[in-house]
Image (cartoon, rainbow, N blue to C red; front, side, top):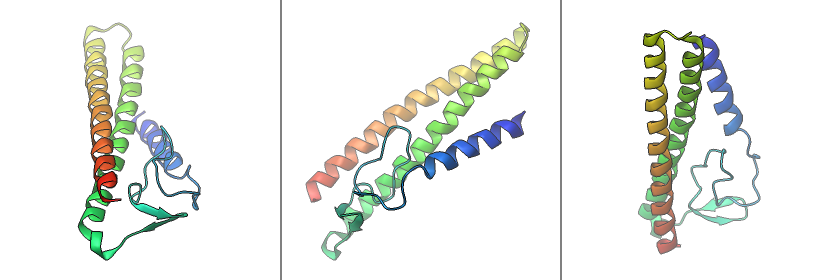
Length: 137
């Protein structure tokens, strides 16, 4: 059962990671609610190519770092969603046993708390990156 869950989770991550076209019309923006951000999301763009100038090396490195942090946070959100599904499966298959129901509720509670933390962290990182980006661009 865990192997099936792991295979489904990897498939979702691969699908979401490749859902963007290789050549985008604009390199700015996160692409959508379920898509993963690119590492150059907050940089200046010329068409579909991110631009980096030597005079803004450190701010650009900060923006790239924030984009990578946002990517990792969104991946943890996908994992937390998988745990919500796993907790639901555990709850359904517990067959009323008190230990199984308690374990399933604990899994669901922890996964939902994780999702709330991920949503808050993604919003915070995105806001900070946009403030830093607007200050240097």
